[in-house]
Length: 118
Length: 118
DNA sequence: CAGAATCCCTGATGATACTG
DNA sequence: CAGTATCATCAGGGATTCTG
Image (cartoon, rainbow over all chains, first blue to last red; front, side):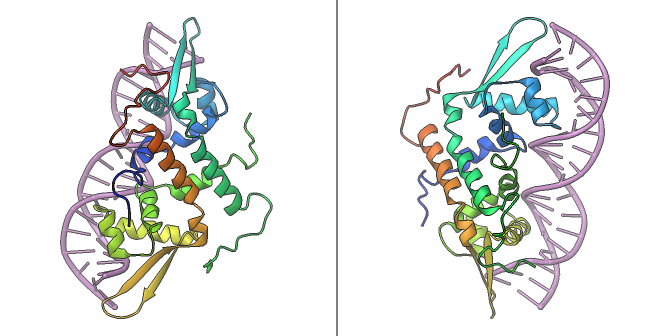
């Protein structure tokens, strides 16, 4: 039976990572500091509105930092906080599963276990 | 720069786990075989429609199995496949992060790093 | 360049009632 | 019990335009 205290409570994490672009956005940031435009291009076709929203939320959660470099044209950088970087294992686990279960380009595994793929 | 081949491709996983209830549903199944009604109560207030939809999708992906035990009243059991059970590390990583970063009931950590909590 | 402001729209989900 | 069938809903996103 579940430990309804807290140990099993992934809800907060789910809420944090919720949103169509959040995980993809974070993945990008794991590759280093990014500017707004970079993220926008990388996450294309995300809308600037959505990108801003997601970044703001992550900022509030202490997952990313926003650094403004005054001047014209504007220069803003987004970077993962230490707290944010600690999300790494989650991505690692996802990649691991993807690699072992999704047969990238070349593999033949497609034999699940209970199979019956129509 | 990112390895645009496949290694970094978490998209399929994200798609698989997408949906408001999917992760919560899977978490329940990690606690053992469940019947439709059990899941419904546990995930309350999920609607039967949504629960069915999610279960069907997971079934198609080879993540869960549906077993029908003929008779009246009906008896249907849902269980994780081996493939599904291999998603475990993802949950583990989420729980780990939640425990270390979200200060369950008693803790005081709330000091992120770049702080500046409003 | 980085957003803010608007308006719009669709798809995931909810609510409810019914059935084998 | 375990769904299916319908209809209604709404929030997350999208598209576009504008500005410091």
